[in-house]
Length: 437
Ligand SMILES: NC(=O)c1ccc[n+]([C@@H]2O[C@H](COP(=O)([O-])OP(=O)(O)OC[C@H]3O[C@@H](n4cnc5c(N)ncnc54)[C@H](O)[C@@H]3O)[C@@H](O)[C@H]2O)c1
Image 1 (cartoon, rainbow, N blue to C red):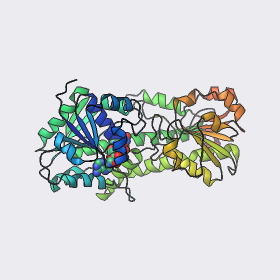
Image 2 (image 1 turned 120 degrees about the horizontal axis):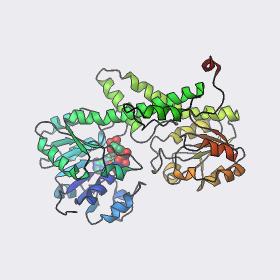
Image 3 (image 1 turned 180 degrees about the horizontal axis):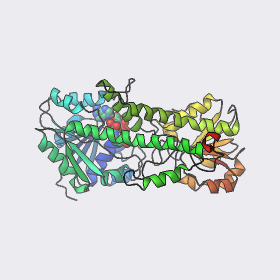
Image 4 (image 1 turned 90 degrees about the horizontal axis):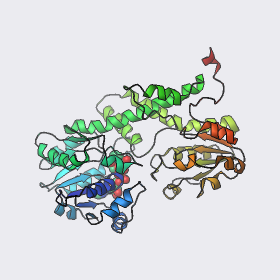
């Protein structure tokens, strides 16, 4: 790799920022990454990765010479012309995006006229224009991030597309950012800032819609005796539909979909447009998490005093991210029904501990299953597919499993002696009479 590549500044070293910093360093750039949390910066400077993301720790250590972490903005500004902003934009109480972290970064650059600000944080359409109006001397490029946690390094290095939005006057800044991404080989979509901002929000809202859609199809499948896996397979072969994000389960979570769907709904609402479809997407997702409780009740009756195991806690496998994880709602609902909730997750326990009061944590799936009345598969960690389910039957008080991700093989589980129920899977009971008419 060439050591001559453009030096880069990264502001905010969370999931997006750390992956961005490490990947650009891997591509040969000198990278200075800044965060306001001193402990995080110290840990990263010692070579300790602060999040669980496959391949990331190795990348950080391998590129230690090119990658510096700091709490000081000046250290970035001295070294780099292009600054990638990767700070968090969580939801406010009203459901809009909270732009306070973005604003504080912008305030620090108020006097600056020498740098290009590339916005990777997900912001509502119109944010870039407002920043440019306020600080016309700043070169501004919208560069939304599309990586998925759990495969973030791979997604960053092999992007489906890179979106770069620049308004007239900032075209050369857009060229400079595009040049940095060129070695990755993904298609580069050049557009204006507002459209780039909308591409990000619309993409996440569309994916969330696909998930809520297939979840509703799954619920109907349960009523009519169809199998949602078969339905999704048949649908997905239609090139206009495609196979991805057609996996039924207990709903989406994570740091992006819930807040971005809400932010788009609010963004539209703030302009006077009522985005009806997104209301349904959000509601279906909320109700879907709770269906597990109904399923357990269907088998066990009252859940009071029942010992229920959550297998997996993170919002998806290969991450320890607990933001908006379905397990949070599920644990609280089960506890609300009087159940005793125990849990096991291969990596997320430490992050989850403070967020799940009253839950008992185990360091193995088998340990958690001991004496349990039911298990719920919440996160599709590969190790659950390989668990010795025959042995598990003997350990549980009642071998009942609700597979919230349709991840396990029903035949294997039933052959092992389990009462198995998935989401919209065939063979889970007789179709309702209404459907039989
Ligand atoms: N996590 C994802 O999968 C993902 C994917 C695509 C886009 N995004 C978007 O990227 C943005 C960042 O997401 P994330 O998951 O990496 O967030 P995160 O919370 O993991 O990280 C944000 C980091 O920014 C730091 N920070 C806050 N204010 C700062 C400041 N003034 N200067 C320097 N650092 C500051 C925080 O301390 C934190 O370490 C969000 O807008 C998110 O919507 C996230």
